[in-house]
Image 1: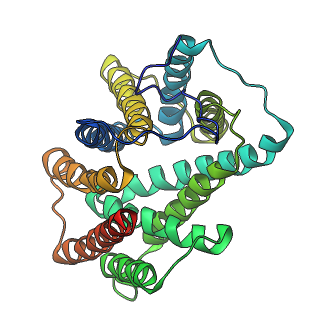
Image 2: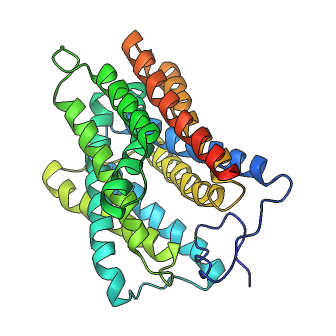
Length: 311
């Protein structure tokens, strides 16, 4: 049976198969899926930040992870179930990806507890630029002066937000940067998997590792008896996170990436609105200026790639 269009468990097509040109409406569908993905991830962050004000962080990670594992297993049933056996060449990439996933989750959620959600989201907007720089350094992808300039402008934007040397630059700013760098590791090492490694396997191992990490660390942090509202919020968080994963993969398989990718920056808008409505947080002038530099640099890079693709 053919996997659904937005299923996160579709396998990569063999290299011999030529990708068909986008059909009418594909770009719009891809843009909608990307916006839904950013909405899912942003709402998940807001719910976790709210829940962990009263529940220990690692208990929340563990409970959310258990729900995620069940959800991923159920979704995988549509494509014949989970295939957890790894080929020998995929074991080291899985190790490094799991390391990046676990490390970035721990650092990100700890920073989320201490930082304004909009400020943290603004720092995360530099992720696409950092991945582009890493691909040039480790995979030899071309990086001309325009791309290099865009990366530099994006890094300046991050520095404007964090303001090294000021009272705003503290340990949590470094934690946020560490989370972003581990996300770069996670995203880049994904390219090393063979074509037989399904997205279901990769996603399930990542969710399993994060859940086990949360359980182990929760033993030292302690547990509380959650009430019905907290359990409901964790179920909601898991649902948002599942929505984010499913639609993110679906967006990358519909339409032109150069058209769809700019909609990734809607996550910053989601974070700012959530921070304002739920936590009463309004970004300051430096966050607005830095975010403008980061989004502008990323948008220029995507526009430049589109121009080169047409040529």
